[in-house]
Image (tube, rainbow, N blue to C red; front, side, top):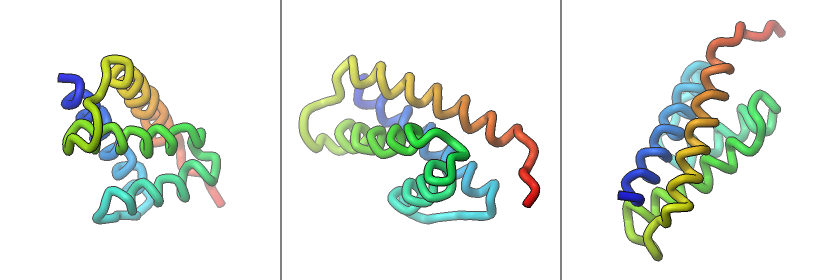
Length: 104
């Protein structure tokens, strides 16, 4: 169930990115808009390490591979990697959401 695991890991990151954006009063209807806004609001500003934006982009590619069969199936190594990304992503987002808002 490697394809399914990769897809669920992506959705965990995607919904977390949506929550972070919603916390700023921002809402988007497409995956690409959420990913772009996450990059603009969190990666480019340094609120979160830019690697999290890259994780989200690469995870979407793996999700497409797993869900739509666009190319070969997700490998065990790729599934392991995306699960690690998701864990890091969720921890980083939790830290942002628990930190007091900056004044200014």
